[in-house]
Length: 344
Image (tube, rainbow, N blue to C red; front, side, top):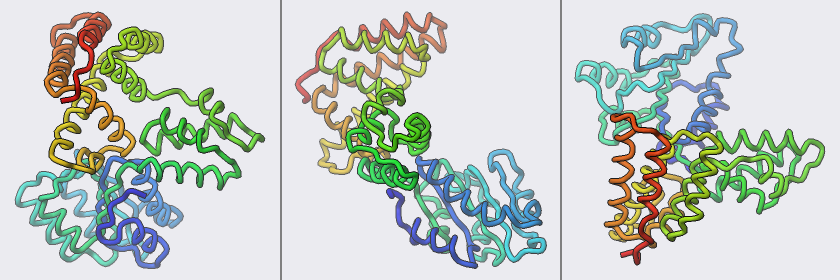
């Protein structure tokens, strides 16, 4: 798996879940929410069967729960149990926190209650945060990143093998290409394939093509490939398909802009000699591979022009209220108006 291994990472998590003593402070972060939620559910299940679970299992949305409410849950003793579980979603304290609150949390992290399992489930953190550093010292910190393509393929094969299904390597590659980098999306598509194949235990590439719809992001990659290569007919064929599928123009423009930004950043990192684009950008390795290929086929000035076109198109829809599809079609014409530069 591609989780970072600070403080033992997932290995220690598995050991903790098997042990009698799971108390401590945990910080889970990273973009792979499927894997993160999997471990949080494992902890939750340790408490769910307790007859007094409602008094010993607390889940808070840190964005709108008063601090005193959370502190009361932490400081109160468990009811007819040795332990209690407190899950705090998006507290924000590892990014920005008032000094008085920081002092309170710092004291809890230094001396956590010996009866509490406190899990912070954070979408965003700042590596410079003093509270985050204290967690790394006294607690367990795990960053759940997207799996590499190899890791994803191994997970797919193992998942299906446990259900007595065989999937070819070609089918695995097609499944990843279509479903994208999210384990959650791939998980959903595997269940569809199992339902479709039924007693036929062999999942083929044709099965995947029939059942698994290509993700919007994958279609955007195709569109950009054709824009960069100057294949205007193919570009407009992609756009026509998206229109038939009733995709939202604003979302298409956003994904185009995000992809162009990713290609631009990739080009910059490559110019500095970076060999870990996936790590630099915090993206799945197979997406980084696409960006690397695309970045070598287009110049930096042209990328900046394309990004400016996307920004303007977004403003024309959101601020001026222009017709969405007219704006998107005009944008595609602009992006396709010049063939790829020499990659300089």
